[in-house]
Length: 347
Image 1 (spheres, one colour):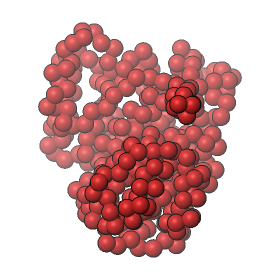
Image 2: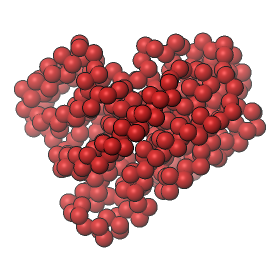
Image 3: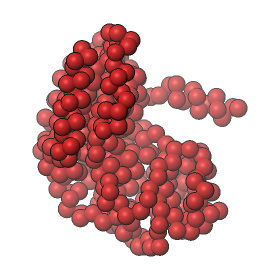
Image 4: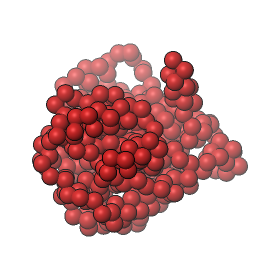
């Protein structure tokens, strides 16, 4: 394992300075929120359904939005991480197209299909073909510069894609969020930032040579998938996530075999969970422990749903970064994903 106090070794492993970029997540969030609120975009009306299109880290905004707003979203919503849109998409559907690079082939395919179906669209991207599509078709868009993500790695630009999407939907009146809810949450997280970072540094050792299994619920459901992806891409580690209450109906019976599996459970807890979920969290922890597996509980401060989301985003980003470095991995690259894309292009 790498000594995380060895700055020279870390610089060799991390030439794009993933640590420095991760430390700018809150700056990204603040920049995206301010930039989107300064845009001149039209109010979108006549919407009956919303479809979010994005792959990998580019879908993070939709996951967070659906989790936080929950039943408050006034439209049926669906997340598509594929090439094709649902058959019901039409003139009264808003298709939200997100691609950090602007070159994601699945999202570009959905963009062309949305245009053919005469659906309403909004776009979030750093550039590429998707930005050109937005300009050519006069589609409301947030095209960000990404300067706070100098490595140009999409998952390291989560501040742009998450707060940018929430802000763009708010600006176009698809959702209704008070601006102060976001700005105040960001300011409070600035105060907690160093403590969260230090906790992640301590906690990463729990997951060395273990398989992290993430549990969460309600408004933090999106964070669970984000953290799973970060373990996969940043730490180069296998991980899985499950949501309460669904996991209580099946997963608990799957803890018996194989015996002595190298599992380490992480439960994302919050004072803002409903009373039913709080009870389920406590019982779920008891079941896991009775099956002789370790459980690590990360509990948010609970000041608001947006505080919770930001707190878990920061914690997960640093936790998975430190674990990847401990494994002596370059946290910024994804060699197998790149290999796969290259082979797919050849075929």
